Amino acid sequence: MTLFQLAPRGGRDGIASETTAAPSARVAASGYLAAQATRHVRDEPPDAPRPQAPDPEALSDIRRSAGRLARHEEKLARQLNEEMAQLVPGSALPLAFDMGAFCRRMARMLLWAVLTDEPGHIVVDVLRQAGGQHCLDGFPDDEYASVAHALVQSVRYLTDDWSAAEASGWVTFFLWARLHLLDGARVAALSRPSADGHGPVAGDQAQATPNKSAGRPALADSLAR
Picture 1 (cartoon, rainbow, N blue to C red):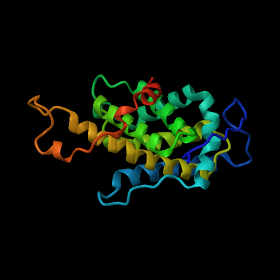
Picture 2: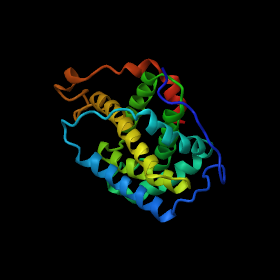
Picture 3: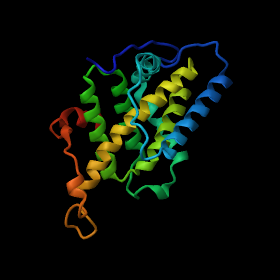
Picture 4: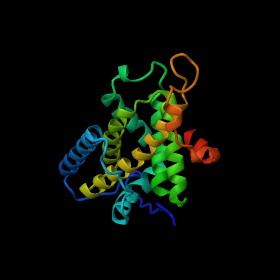
C-alpha cells in the first residue's frame, strides 16, 4: 500500500492554474489556517492524541498543488526561506545554522512525502531521519510551528487555484509529518553528549528508542542534498 501518489496538474507558469476565486478570500483563508496551525502546534498539550495521516480526500487536495510545485522546487524553497526569516528570530538558532539549506531540504522532503509511491513506513523513516538531523543541526523543536505557518503561506503564494480545503489538507499533512520529525529529534537528542562530554545525560539512555531508519541512508541522504 502506498501512502501518497503523484497527480500533477499544470497551469500558468507551470505552477498555478487560473481560478475564479477571489484572491482576497484565498489569502484570508490561508492566513487564518496558517495562524491556526501555528497556534495548534505551540499550544498542543503533552497528552494530545497523535496526529493521523491525511485522509484520501485531503491528500487529493494537496496533491494538486504539490504536483505543480515539484516542478519548481527551488521557488518553493526560496519562498519558504523568506517566510521563515520573518517568523524565526535569529536568536532562536545557532550562529552557524543555514536556514536556506534547511528550507531547501524541507521543501524537497515534504514534496517527496506527498507525491512518493513508497510505502508509508519508508516515508515515516525518512521524516524521522530528517528530524534527527535537524536536531543535531540545532533547529529548535518549538519552531516547527513556524514551519507549519511558512509552508501554508508559501504554497498559497505560489498557487493560484487555492482553497480552504487545500490549506486545511496541508496543515493536516504537516502536523502528521511534524510528529515523526519530532520523534527523530528526540532520538537524536539522546545521542548527543552531555555537558561534560561523556555521552547522553544520565537516565536518558534507558528511555531512548532504537532508530529503525538507521539502515536506510541512501533515500534520506538524497533528500538532504
